[in-house]
Length: 81
Image (tube, rainbow, N blue to C red; front, side, top):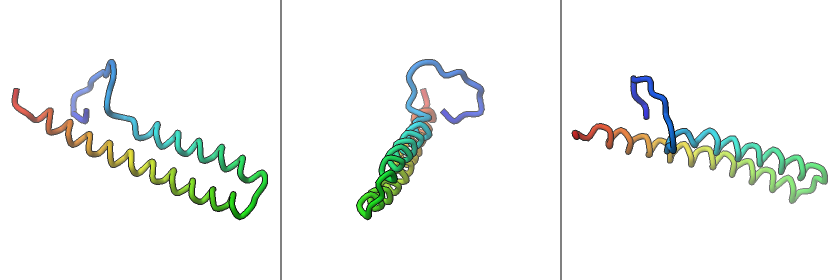
């Protein structure tokens, strides 16, 4: 819903899910890292690195999905009635 008009959205939407998804991934990473660092081992350090990469991948995947959804919305809204 990227338009020049001001609009109040009511109800379900398929836009704006990237930030909450990335925020959730980062929060889970932070909490898990805090638990892993209490008893640091080579394994726990490896897991922290893997989880950090996964959190990054989650953000990128949701951004890609949002971009594709925005493109579909633009095509749908550009159709003549």
